[in-house]
Length: 247
Image (tube, rainbow, N blue to C red; front, side, top):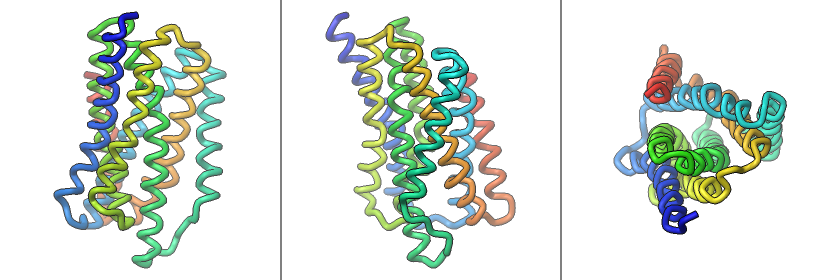
């Protein structure tokens, strides 16, 4: 395969990842502490988008590539690993300012790990898409980059709420997108990657996102909610995600 072609695909993957999540982090440079209802709505919005990505993209692709069994094994594996990670990290349930900061810092870290993990198979999708056709690869890069924005924003707001500096928050969100470049490179080089391995990795990413959404994003969105802010945010996120995926 032409080296220039591989390098171009890798750069496109890097841009889709780092600009997608990094643009979410960039928003926090221009905002002070957000009101609780707005933060609740944003967290729930990101949760809705992640549910769409999990059930409409990651899991169908996992089953399509690796079959139902390997897609399911990947899903269960992702949930199990993040359940263990959640047990190992300190878990706060008391909402004094100090404890709330600790909880948001932990949630932002978990989100960053989950985003980085699922950016690798999404990068693979971009790389293999380009190996199939230019239009398919570019379309995947645009869609994946767009839906990475609310993920990066949710991560940034959590880190910001946990006391991280603006610069460190922006850097962390951009770094979470880097693995997409690696995935795009592997996809371009290994256009015929094992369907089973791809199915497992996509399922694992889906399990990780599902756990983070259910255990972290939505509970905290409801804790911060005033009225229907969490419910409205979730529904808006789901509808927006469906519209983006359907484009």
